[in-house]
Every structure is written in structure tokens, then in C-alpha cells.
Length: 140
Image 1 (tube, helix red, strand yellow):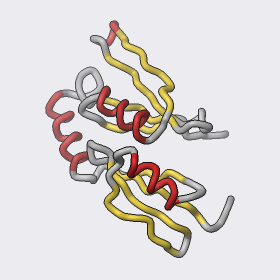
Image 2 (cartoon, helix red, strand yellow; image 1 turned 180 degrees about the horizontal axis):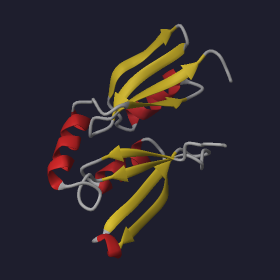
Image 3 (cartoon, helix red, strand yellow; image 1 turned 60 degrees about the vertical axis):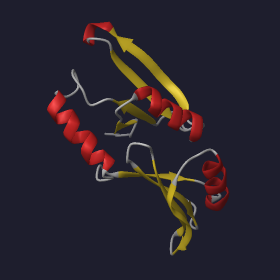
Image 4 (cartoon, one colour; image 1 turned 90 degrees about the vertical axis):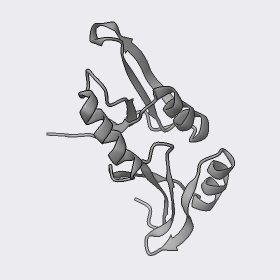
């Protein structure tokens, strides 16, 4: 049996604002943007890193029909606190990517720092999701 990661969910309160950040600032590509009338207009919106078509982030609003309103409010509160998990994005030049993304308006909470495994920095999206930007010393 073979299992592969294809999608990861990111809870966002506003899909257009998320699209602006992930595509406009991080440089990701829109993969799918489909409205589903049969699900009260639910919008299936995915983005992903260029050159990695097998992986997408679902920019998902935690509202019906996905979750009830009360649960959605709780989810967004946890995301805003930075407690909804985190992601690692690999780069071959952490310091250069840091400069480029900072210039595009991405706000970092940790500048690039050398660690035993490589160089990394941390930023948060406008909603609270944590991302580590990692340049590893050991290549796979």
C-alpha cells in the first residue's frame, strides 16, 4: 500500500485575504477555485508551491457546511493563537528567502538562525498559522 500527502487544510476567516497572502506574498499558485452551489456556495480553494504540484493547501473557512458556526469560531480562535499546528517550507537559501518574503510584506517572528540541522526562520500568516522556513545542511 502506498500513501501520499496531497492536501493540508488551513483554516482561514477570509479566502480572498488568504489568497492575497499565499499567492501575492508567498508566491504560491492557485490550484483549484471552485464554487459548489449544491453545498450552499461552498468554495473549494487550493494553492500550492510552484514546482510541487502534488501538494496543495486547502484555504478553508470553518463555517457550514464544513463545521457549525460555534465550532468555526473556536477553530479560528485557536488558529489566531498559533496553536493549530505548523508547517515547514524548505528553501535552498533561507536568508535570501527571508529578505525576499520580508520585502513582500511577510512578517517574521524569528529571523534566520543557524541550528544543528540548518538555517531556519519563522513567520506567521495573517491568521496565525506558523511556518518555518528551513534550509537544511543535509540534502536528501
